[in-house]
Length: 317
Length: 298
Image 1 (tube, rainbow over the protein chains, first blue to last red):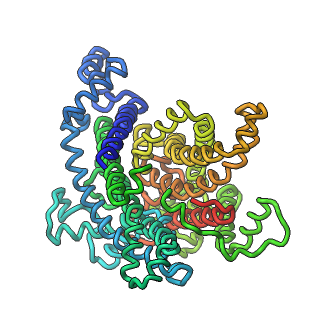
Image 2 (image 1 turned 90 degrees about the vertical axis):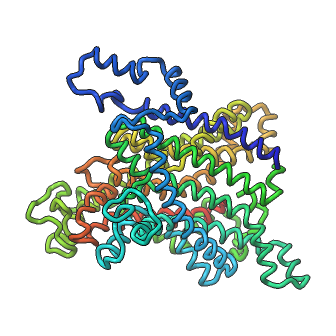
Image 3 (image 1 turned 30 degrees about the vertical axis):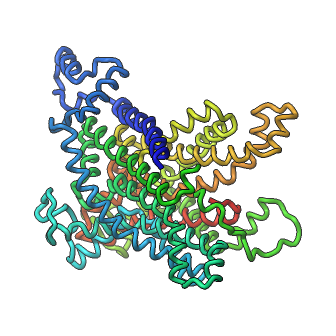
């Protein structure tokens, strides 16, 4: 197990390096000068040169990358061009809000998806199976930003039960564990949960169906084991794969909540990202994407290690 | 996926075929017998034809607004699907909107299919250092959730149709490359490839004659399964304001601009999303149908 962990950790390093290169290059592919957003239109060439040197933009690309990555390793992600505040503090505040949303969606989606998928796999080729399959195809096909709008129309506009935007009363940015704040979480979390419900149900259905037709299940029944105990064996066989799909989905939920955050004005990383895009605040864009991607990489790592811990067959490959 | 491969799922109960027929004839026959797939294909064909021939269908001008006819409800005389927040005919805009939405939603997968297949086949056939370079680069792109990568590249490049096409193509090249490489490595290990090489055939000849025909169906089926995500992402970019620019009719953009009307006429403002949903549902079901008709297993 320890050698597997070390090997897997070593494999992460080149990926993390690649991620940092892509995030660095994002700013380079952006058209125009990164300084145009803050420089007055009538700035003289001399003033521009001073600013360029101040931001280190006058050095060759590899040097700029080295300086950038050096600062990054010390926790310095530069300053937001629009607000002048450190990118790191802006990003971490927003990521916390996104994480709250993603974890809430996961708490809704994973048990429901697992239950539905298992039901469909167990009662394969019955009406229950067909209903779950139809539901999961609908779930992965629905554009979730549109579903968010539809839910707002039903529950905010027509019924007036739930608020349609923000993370708290009066546009509050801070979070508290009371009903006034929790109400704001319900619609975005449910909207975000729909796609993973479909994906988890689909995966668990295939897994359960496959494992139930395997010889060892017949053998367990034949030796007189109770139905419940047999299902325990089936669950344990399915756990590693199901867990890896769920772990990946949690990563997707955090990175993919951007559109939902835009629909509900949720003050998370997606909100920050769209602000960064529209104000052409490239350091902020770069920092947000870097943090989200590194979170996703870490999530994948945790999933792989957990999978190996559950299923010893994986370590050998 | 590798863990589920050992499971037996032989296609039991398939009707016995009377006389041997070609692979594609079999695929066609299975597709025709599948009512859901045929229905989805028909709906998609209708949407594509309507989009292509939109200017000749005698619809209202999708760009011409009217200050006095704003946000007319569904069923209004002369505007069957109502009018949008600038008084433009919704039916005309939805039909015309299909042109850009379907183009930006499908084209990236087509482009990524060619580029990704080429990269994957080369990586899988040549192996060695070439494989390492291509596949480790692909791994890096897998570190980004697809939505994030699409928004990151589009956000950096700025709004515009070409920029959306570029960013979505980049998003879909890595997954297609990975599948192409896996399938090609499998075929590469088979005896008939060794036999072909032993006769002195060049790498290009072996790939062209023996590899492509055997790897293209699974890659193609996989690519079709990505079209629905690509549609949703393409419309999503416009919804965020970093895709198609106004006043072009495009479903994602229309969904965004109509949000201001959500308290005036809520169901009207949800219409463009219905188009995205129906298209993406049909794409998913069609891809599933193709997968089972072509006997490709994931």
